[in-house]
Amino acid sequence: MPEWLGVAIAVLYGTIVGSFLNVCIWRLPRDESLTHPGSHCPQCGKLLRAWDLVPLFSFLLQGCKCRYCKGPITWRYFSVELLTGVYFGLAYMFALNNSNAVVVDFLQYALFGAALIAIFFIDLEHWIIPDQLSVFGIVLGIGRDVYGLVSHTRETFHIPVPWTSLSVPLPQSLAGIFACGGTFLAIAVVSYYIFKKEGIGGGDIKLAAAVGANLALGPAMLSFFIAVALGSFIGIGLMIFGRKSRKDYVPFGPMMVAGAFVSMFYGQTLIKMYYRLVGLDG
Ligand SMILES: [Zn+2]
Image (cartoon, rainbow, N blue to C red; front, side):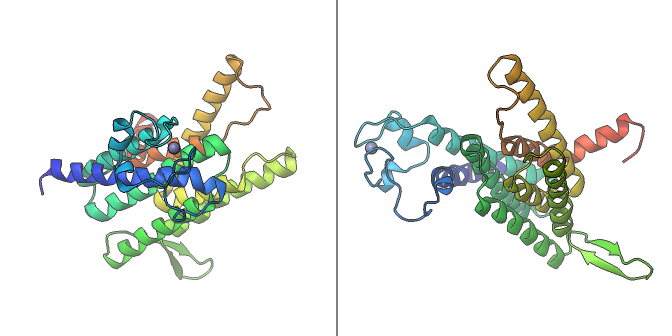
C-alpha cells in the first residue's frame, strides 16, 4: 500500500472516531449512555439521520446549523473531527517511520490519543476526567504490552528480589502504572495533609496511570514536567492579564494531555538532547 493511501485511510478513520469523541465529550460528563438514544440535536431533540452525521461535511453543508431547527451547532464538533483526523494521519506517518510493528503501534497512538483528545475537552469545560477514558487508556497500554510479550518485540523489566538471586518480571505498562500513578498519589496525599487542600484530584491520578501504561517511563515522567511547566506558564499569564485570581481553578488534565502528546512522539528525542546538553551520553 502506498504511503499516501495509508495516511488518507488513517485520516478518514480519524474523522469518524472524532465524530464519536464528540458524543463522548457531550455525554460522559453528563453520565448519559453512549449508545442510547441515538445522536440528536441538543436543542430541538430531533434524532439525526446518517446523512446528518457525515464527519466534517454535514457540518459545513448545513452551515454550522441544525438542519431541522436551524439552532447553532458549536464549532467544537467540526474542530474535534478535523483534529482527530489530522492526528490519526500524523500518528500513522510516525508509526510508519519509527516502528517495527506499524499497525499495532499506530493503533496504540491513535486510540490513546483519541482518549486524550476527549479528556482535554471534557476536563477543560467540566473539571472532571471520566474514569471510562482513563481505564480505557490503562487497558490499551496493557494490551499493547501483551502483544509485545507474545511477539517478542518488547522487553520486560526485571525487578530484583532483595537478598536473593531471583527477579520478578514486570511488563513496561505495569511498571509505568505503578510509578506514575504512585507518584501522583503520593503528591496528592502530601499536599492534602500539608497544605490542607486538594491539589491533585483522583481523575489526575488515574490519567497519570494511563500515561504510564502507554509511554515508556522516561517520556511519561517528562510529560508531567511539561504539564507542570505549561500549567505554571498559563496560570501566571492568566494572573498577569487579570483573568484569574490565585485561588481560581485551572484544570490540570489539559496540561497533562498536552505533555503526553509532546512526549509520546518527541519524548525520547528530548531526553537524548537533554543528556547531550548536560554532557552525559544517553
Ligand atoms: Zn435542532
